[in-house]
Image (tube, rainbow, N blue to C red; front, side, top):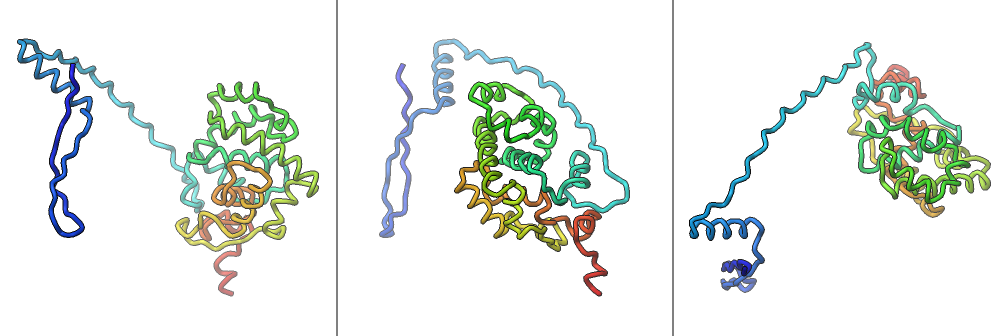
Length: 264
């Protein structure tokens, strides 16, 4: 059986304003081959058999997400799944090394995904990565990597899993050099939170100069999945910056001054 070749002529405008005719050849598409076979079968008194379409199963209706309605004003991203995290963790200063390593891991795992996806898998990550104890995770070998890649409770991307082990080893090196991971990361904001005053989430940047510097320095040390955007998300999560909008009830709880205090 010969393949079908299509020849077409295109009228192109030449740079010198002269029109030239150009012939182009293209390989036959699968659809073109099927059409040719169908036409040949018809000429021989045969019809191309048609496949019966399977009836579509009705789509399951999504259950409406419960609405958080307690009278408190929050950042607009805090839906039903995120509300506890938003109210109790996001933007509140963290100085514990294990907790800081947890957020380095989770923020890196989020790359290319939604934060909601990560939150729903957070407990699985805690179990899989020994409660985020870097001294234990640093000892994980290749067999453990293969085991974790089979764990449906995790984001099963080899690079992200291997980077967690690499980053754990680097955290231990930082602790030797700086006394703690906390001392090191908080040094990028001079040891105290940066209090921003954003009226809308649209005003919040993807990264700050501090985040860019931290990402650059940590990349030099060998950290993976920790670019400027992830570094800034990490800073937001552990309270190195307060990026709650000024009308969110958490803004003042995380060190921001209320509007009337600023006006005074």
